[in-house]
Image (cartoon, rainbow, N blue to C red; front, side, top):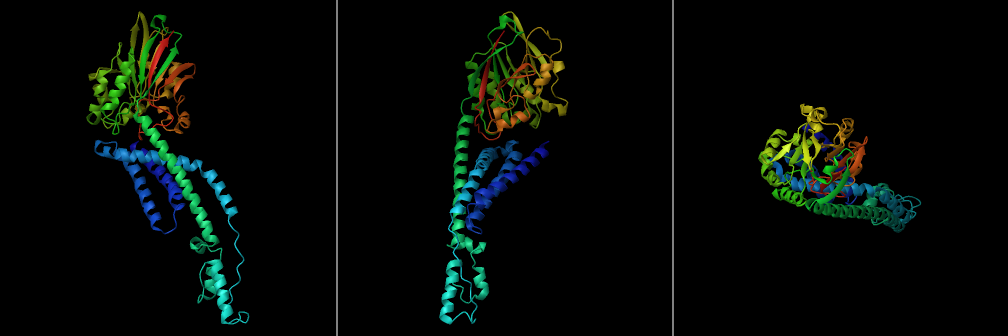
Length: 446
């Protein structure tokens, strides 16, 4: 799985950097010059950095790669987005610039030395000068026929360096290339800067009122805090978890649910960052289900299950608990993430819902929304999920629906309500554009 992932990263990285080289280096510099060589080398190093970051930042020794590597990844992505968006206006501008270029003047034919029509030496000198000025801006004396031919207006090499028509075309091409690169660069850096500020800022507290027809009316107003995708890792610190805990506790929830992707590393690497979670306060307890990233850690999810137990957080591994509130009862079930299926540790809804009273409401915790169709067949009333990050970085939100039935917010799948939280952290680049981090406060009503 890891080898395949890295191979995909390598292929995509090479393709993107080749495109960036064409638009940011080849289109903005002259052939063979020092600026082109330097910029090519810089872009190559940045491409290698992306691949090394994905491979190395997964272990504690490579955490130092995370900031430069992931920041370039974000800038690279938005450079790609803006350059692609600029392709059409760039093509239109190029056609307009070419149309406005001055037409080449007629060039007299070169006359060989000593020919009958060439006149005397004075006439020959004048003729050579005329050819040189109009074609390449210099004399072709002593060059004979080949010199005249080499200086024709249509010669790309001559046009690239001359101040004549070819040089004018080159200047216009460079101007357009540099203008396009400047617009894309400023837009990408501005977008990433905004995204960093959003990702590292306070999550938004989203209040959501959800009606469940089978909910016991005595449970009206039950408050469930939903947080997902905290992603403790190389770019976060203890303050990240402390802030999330503080914001959840301020809402005074009855139940706290952590819906997967808590960590991007082992307990040895990130245990200290997770300790603030032991301060979560909820009347009826705090619950956790695994996400796909728990299965990506070197030691698997079990060590985190045990670590969370010591912090007072119960993991629901294909099981359910009864939440009793003001005389009413609600079934809260949780399943392992679908990524665990390859390790015989995947979701088992039959086991999780076995023995329940089908006449009362059931809320399911499942990291990925894709499980919703199966949950609906089992009679679940509400599924709470994460995983999508709401797309995290526009326009990824347009791609998520290919795999997941709901990107963010409240939706319906086969008659069952699904709420997908955008997550309180980030994965990869510390950047969120169009999908601010979220802590959800669900209030249930009959």
